[in-house]
Length: 65
Image (cartoon, rainbow, N blue to C red):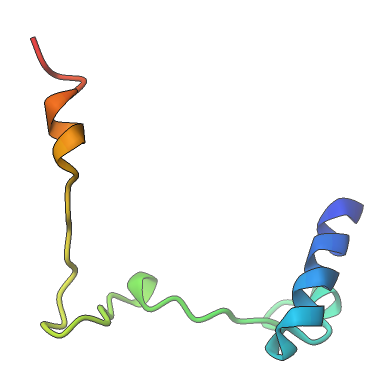
C-alpha cells in the first residue's frame, strides 16, 4: 500500500484534480474517476464504439491451423 501511496502522490503533483487523492480514495464516495466507456458513452463521431484490428494479429492468429 505504501508504494501505491507514493505513486498517487506523484500523480497528485502533476494533476491538480487529484488533490488529496490518498485521503479521498479511502472514503466511500470520496473519489470518482469518470469512465465514459463504463457508462456506455462512446466519445466518437458516430456515438458508437469503434473496434480496429491489426493486420499482424490476423496473420498470426492463435486459432490458425
